[in-house]
Structure formats: C-alpha cells, structure tokens
Length: 249
Image 1 (tube, rainbow, N blue to C red):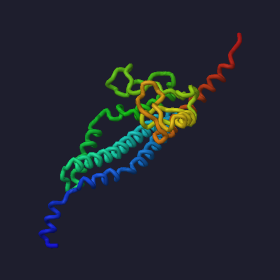
Image 2: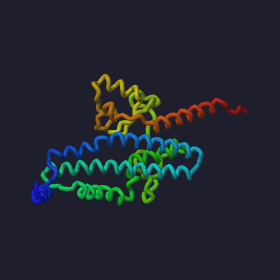
Image 3: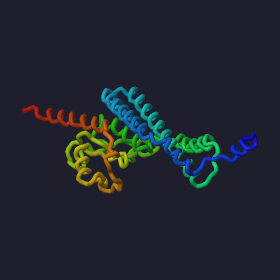
C-alpha cells in the first residue's frame, strides 16, 4: 500500500453506524459502579446519623461533604454514559466522526458544566434532601425540616418532609426495607417480593399517584431506612417504658 493510499484511508476514515453500539457497550458496566456509589452513600448517611446523635457537628459536616463528593462522582459516571449515548446517536444519524476523543471531551464538558455551574445542585437532589432529612430526624422526629435553601422562607421545605417508616403494603414497621431505584418508594422486602411473585414479576408502584413500574431488579436494599426504623423502634420503646412510671400524690 502506497503512502498516498494510506493517507487517503486516514482522510476518509470515520466511525460507521454499525460501530455506534460499541460506544454504548463501553458503559454497560456502569450499573455496578452506581450500586457501589449507592452503598457508599448509605454508609455515609448512617455515619452522619450516628454523629448527629452524639452531637458531633464537626463530623456531621465532614459526612455532609463526603456525601456531596459521592453525588459529584455519581453525576460524572452518569454523564459519561449520557456522553457515549449522545455520540452513538450522532453516528447513527450519519455524522462523520473521525476521532472520538475530541467530541467526547466536548460533550462531556457540556454535561459537567451544567452540573458544576448549578449552585443549587445539591439542594435540588432528592438523595441529598433525604440525607439531610435523616440527620434532622435524629433530634426532631416529629418536626418539619427547614428549607435547605437559605434564600427560601422557613416554611418552604425542599423535597419530602415526611418519610414513612411503615410499609405501605403491610402498614407495619418496614422489615428488610428495599427501595425502588425507579421511584424511590420503600417497602418491606417480603411484602413487595410476594406481590411481584403473584403478579408475574412486574407491578405498578403501589403508592397512589406513582406511575412507575416495579420489578425485582429495581429494588435495592436500603440500609439507611433500616437504620431509621431501628432508631424509631428504640425511641418508641423508650417512650413506652417511661410512661409506665409516674408519681402519685
């Protein structure tokens, strides 16, 4: 092959539509990374609850910073998947892409800038709102959490303010809680598993107004919720024991 023909091949080379799926395959294993991040977030949340119970505000602040770092990392992984999918779509549409590195960096930067330039990115996150709610409930189990946004009025609350610790299927305390990664609703593992078995492996979310479907693969063990239930039970038992004794004049 002559230098001229080699130069011509290099000049005419571009990724073909039948190669586009290869870009999506690269990110197929990201689900394992997301699961690891989720476990890390639950560990940090439980640690923050422990430190809040001990009134170690400095360590709670450290846990808060760690949780935000995990949110940043989770976002970077998600952006990589979105970037690969976007480039795959462009190739499938007929765009001539010779060097994947250049457009990859361009698209990735757009996603990263969108996240990093949003000053309210954490407060707008359901995960962060739940994280702060779990900490707040340690000393204020029956009070509404103030707004996470300092510019909002105190009576405006970011995210959910009441998280039920009872299974919506059994109405009893959550047991071995699992949370859907599709809609973030939580159930006792045995109850939702039994419902799925009776319904052929897929059911609409039992929570009124939720339009998501639930399958076994979308259910994730929720260690943070299990810890909240344990603490709530202990608090109820303590309150019950103290009301058994009273002074008689």
